[in-house]
Length: 311
Ligand SMILES: [Fe+2]
Image 1 (cartoon, rainbow, N blue to C red):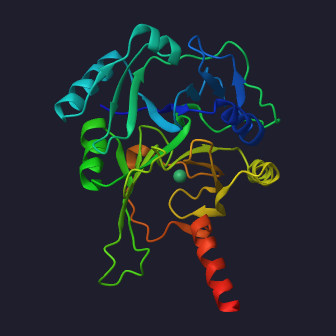
Image 2: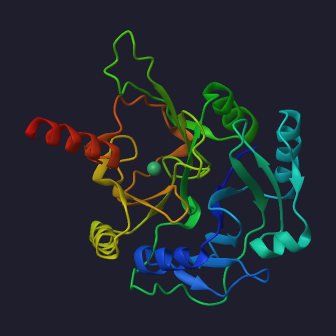
C-alpha cells in the first residue's frame, strides 16, 4: 500500500469568479475548459486540472485527491479505510470522468478533513501555457504539491495517515510557540511523504479544523525569480499576505503564503528539498522557518504593541 502523489484539490466556492481571478492573475495557472458539470478547472501542467472549483453555497475546501498505483491498491485502501471506521463513498463513473481518473472514492480523515483517493490518471490534449508566462510548475512524479490540515485528534490522525493510508513520516516535530515552559504543551506537527521525492505531500498540525476546511495547499515554482514575480502580483492585486517571504527549515522551500478566496492559504514556493523516499531518516526540526515568514497575526500583534507604546 502507498500513495503516489497529490493529484488534485477540489474546492467549493460561492464566488467562483474570484477563484478565476486568483488562479489566472496571481498564480499563473491556466484556465481549462469548464468541466461537464460546470466546475471551473485550472491547470499547472499536463494534467487536465489540478484545481477543481465547484459552485456551491459556501467557500470551503472539499478534498485533497491522492493517486494510488492501480485498481488493486485502490480497493485495498478502501477496505483499510472502512476498517478504520471512516466512511467510504465510491465515486460513480461520471464523477470519475469529471476528475479525469479511472476510479476513485471519497472519505475523510478522523478529524473530518476531506480526502479522495484514485487510480488511473490522464493528461490533457493541449500544452500547458500560463497566461502570465510562468514557464512551469514543479510537479511530475512529485504531484501538485502538498496539502496541510489542522486536526484536534492529532495522534489518531497521524496513525490514520501512516498506518491506514500509507504515508511515511519525514519530519515529526513539536513546536513550542509559547516558549516551551511548563505552561506550554507545544503543538504536534507531522510532515509525511508519499512514494516520491517531495519532502511532504501531506502535513498535519495539532489544532482545531479551521472553518475553511484546510490550512494551506502548496504549489512549487521553478525559481526564486518566479516566486518574486508572484509575490509582486499578490501585492499589486491586493490579495492578503498570510506570511511574508521566508524559508522553511525542513523542506527548505523559499516562498510566501497568500490567502485564497477559499479562506485557506496557498503557499507559493521554490527550491524545495527532494528526498530519497526509500532511505529517508526521520527528522525532528525545532522551528518552522530559518528566516522570514512573518505571519499576518504576528505582524498585527507587533503593530498593536508599537501603537500602544507610542500612546
Ligand atoms: Fe507548506
